[in-house]
Length: 310
Length: 310
Image (cartoon, rainbow over all chains, first blue to last red; front, top):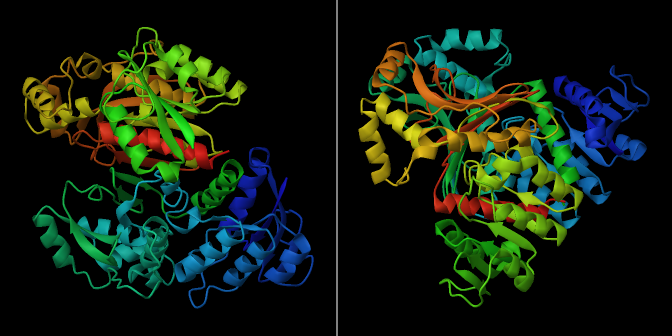
């Protein structure tokens, strides 16, 4: 049985724990401890109770896990305490699975290189499009060089743009998104394109084998978009979408008009979508991009892939 | 270097050979022989030349490959000579990759069971949707139970239905499909739903863990569809699509009307698409479903997965 240390115990962490207990025999793994800002719980229990004081370092020492699963919330300032924890894991023979985007958006190449050098593995499906295969889709589109990626990577903005296309104002659409739980209380990082840019950074490093960091390329959100511009586009048969784009040279997040023949034209509501064009073909996947079940499932998928991949 | 014996040397086989020589170092594999109805070629050469007489049995004995790659054309009568060749491979420690649907559509469970029992592997991405991950998509959607699959699995019929939706008659659409190379000279097995049913059989056994064979469930094609019924549906905001459907109990191929909110509504032309709904979420992939490049890439993908998966 693999021993899992769970970092973070919010909705995603709790759901991950449930899924792991449901599928522990298929996964050959179990929770051996949980660490949050409140302290460390040893063993497995649905309700967090602090067994000992301490942070991630103490937890790694006490629990001695085989895999760290990071479901903590994103810290875009410096990616801590996760980044340091990952390095410590790699040095101690521990693999890492994360649904937390910040560390890889800030420091993808350094983290992946370190893991590789020390023979450790990093599962990060949950950082982009939750459980809808994006990071892991690339694992089954191997060998051929990726020429271009395009994505609708933020459900909040796609929901708002869809409502606006149907005649609802930006403010009303945002309120509706909050009411439905599709937007956070402070939706700034969704609306201004930052969240999509963080995901695009990870995808670009991973699939295009580039070395880009968040902050090194332009991103624009949907804050400045007028109802007029959406209606004008509609009259011309076009839809406005917030598109994340990268190829060998370019990388950007920006609202763009797409036409009826574009696979993204029909991606409405909170759905996310990713198009991968490699030397041979272009394929597009769509599915949920957020939610604790699908995010927890992303980490479960990674854990299973650790078992079946060399 | 893994030694590959290639069965069949049509467009797909030739393209596979080209791809393999382009990516031989990533794949750590090379062509060690080719066998067709014309005889056996030893070693690797772009132009087939018969070195010795014989069929697949002789070729397996002479070439002693690590992997058999079957790009031969489908024989739906009995799946031979492929099925017997696969069994012989498994008994001799040889893995199998196939882009030929017939053996698995006729005898999925027996073939996969035999391979498992003898510790051999079967790659069969190329049997459904060519290089667009379908079989292999499931590899990255693990553990959670699949509840339902739906697919647009035949490009010829989807192309014709798309043209009819745009006002072109069935006969004209079929002629255009032939002109563009989307339909074969005898398109019967595409038009009557047989081809989609063969693919659905493979998907259903694989993802729903059922034991179904081609011929055990109803399939209907698009031959009987009138322009009138397509136009009526269009007036009601619906599109006619040839849908392959399976869940725990049901399995069928049939023309069905889909509405604007269905992910299949926007799958037009020769594109194929597959929706997989498991316990956690529903995801949909779309991409090319035919063509020698994408089919050969399917086999390349499988070969790479043999390398990285246990």
